[in-house]
Length: 259
Image (tube, rainbow, N blue to C red; front, side):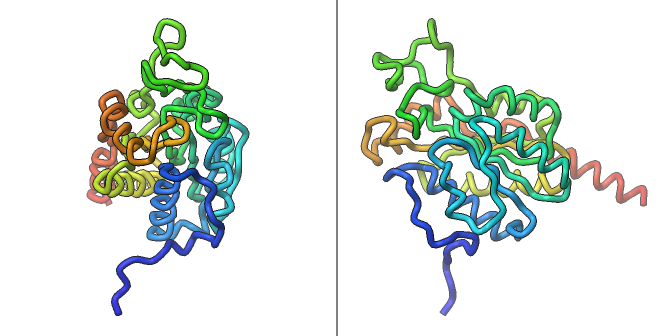
């Protein structure tokens, strides 16, 4: 009998602690599938954040490291510089990356570190109690914004994929979502491409993924899917924001011709 699908071999038998309807589980699965398919398990390290995914090291049979809140890119910098041939992926949430860790991710962009960042944007602090994050939408309710976020005292939502794309040290930046089958398929393609470009060693690769947080948003899981589509995507448009892989390919062809 032909095998249509099997669970990624990298997964352990641990049961996840994610809330029902949370997008982290989907993203964790995509990450595992791509690592399996590309054979990156034995020569790779995942750097986990503080947040809803802070127990994810139980789910993977692979070298892993948990950084202090927001400091994933700093930890990954040391790993990648010490062992340039090692595959390193940094997994971050929006509070972890855009609040506590904004300095670390920005300086990783500036230095053109050679690892991949998977940035999960659910527009809220999930694990710590649904406080508003730098990515929370204007008017969106949160524990620390009971009447809705207002720009006059908390500023505007941060578009990280566009910010990453503006930095010369970033070679690839794309925003995806996991609220529909089509979006999930595209998210997997983006993760795989980011990994492929990392292995070429040309610069930092960045994938932002819009994700559901029914608990933090105080809505049912099905409504959370609609929230991503109707509220988040208009503010955070999907698509590739920067892709220098064509330029890399042209350079490789020129080098081959010289040989």
